[in-house]
Length: 239
Image 1 (cartoon, rainbow, N blue to C red):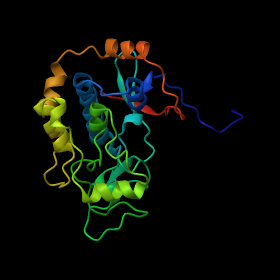
Image 2 (spheres, rainbow, N blue to C red):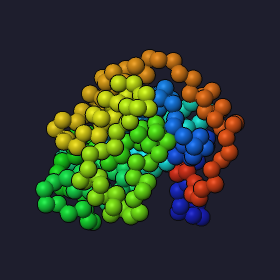
Image 3 (cartoon, rainbow, N blue to C red):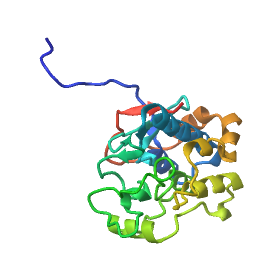
């Protein structure tokens, strides 16, 4: 008999997360790299929903992992919601800036306190208040001047979502993809299967990008950011 009742799961070690990678670079991550990452992200989220009925709900740079082989994986399923009667059931937690607007209160009169908004999840999972691509592509968190979560939530609910600045030279497809993902009206927001048909996704599905070499080069030429907290050990490969 086993002397302990705890369950331990051993998983492969990843190189770092996108959040720490951004801090290493101290600037934007190239669009071509983000293109490959985005393809992996959308395919993984579509797989989770269609095959397992799971909505991640907290996709952010610190939950996106990369390794020296150029693989991209998703971690931290702590607030994932399982679909029940077409609604995602989950506890209220996670990073306010990245969680879907529907979890903050997108219905008229709903007050974002302890429970998620009762409206059905818009699109497939609800629109995130901030697209991870925006932060990683610009090298800056859009709400970095906010001092409290309440201040962030106020901006999320009352202001237009932060999009990619055209002046930074991003492709039209990339700008359109982010804009579509952050559409607040769930009736107009594309679902995962439609996102997989987006020109931006189609382009980087076939375009050859050596993510592994880029990653190794960044890791070799930059210093590790001195930040607390480690990576979650619970992650799933993007397919």
